Image (tube, chains in turn cyan, green):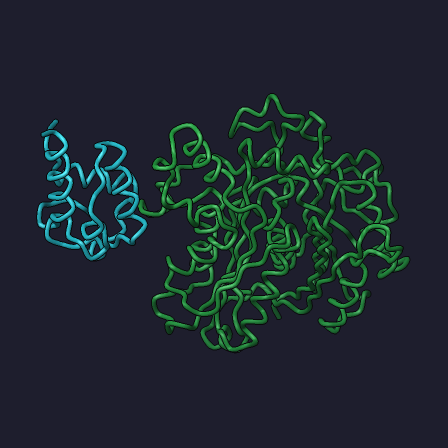
Length: 86
Length: 399
């Protein structure tokens, strides 16, 4: 399976929660938090639920908070899917 | 009252709705939103198809039922119409009071289908609030940053008046601006069976003969969907900012019917008398009545008798433009208020589509299917909600 990337998260967020804080374009958003992009806790919960459905992995709670960065979320999905593949 | 927002079967936007209403237009038609062919009732007043993505920000789409989308669009229109920019108001200066009777049926049905066909992990996190009657008040409040009083009324059709009365109370209590009104939609299989189950929904097939209140052919009502939102403001502060005023809420009362078999009379007449007293208006001063118009023969008889008792031999004009939209539950009576304010503005009584005077079965002066020009200063709007709710509101034209 291809490794999970920021583009995957971008698509996921657009699909389940839109773009409340403006455009998600650009790689600079990796180090911003969900809250800074206008997402609330339900939006992050919804994104995590879709990751679980699609990739069969459960993310640790510390990366599914509104204060988490997108990088932490992406890295956690990668780590979990790789661990699963081993 | 300084702003109007409408999402109705006969039009989206104040003037589109009003043009259709004045002309006696009807949107009652076979249901297209879902396959209704297997149900006993197959007609509804549906809001015309539109792309929500063109009218609402993307993040609100995955978390809103149609009723909430209608409420958000109508609230934005009403604020624009009133010339209010919420961000410029003090944080707690604006409140929101809405009515909803059904909740988010369509959204909820989708999530129930996910739950039972795929599993709990497929249920949207947004189901936690999207189904809820109170969500329209919350979403409007969040979107526009209105942190004043937030209230929700659940009294079915009466809710459209009860919410506006509650808004008046908040204004009197010191909140300068309140967004208020009603929104409802339940046009999906789950919502539809729930509506049909009340036994009052018309089963007739022909759109022009399906909802004929006060007629000898009355056979129930046709359900509709939509939202009507108003801006209610303190009269002095509206005047101070030079706001255009449609008119004022002059009087209101709500009553509750006694239980069946009690022998006590229904509460509608009492609501009318108390609302007139609250407005300090005599029956002679009422120029037009917007009827609840249940379309169920015994309920029509109750309303006609209440009007007869209050107005006596005087033939006060009665209209029910909702025969062109169907009954919109919580949105319905507020949409009647919109029509009443615009009737006062334009000095014309909108017609009661499809109901011909010759067929009226009660001693009331129903206007029939053509508009009537008249000198109008004061209107009375009536609403009854399933479960025993009665509400009456008196409005006056802007001076």
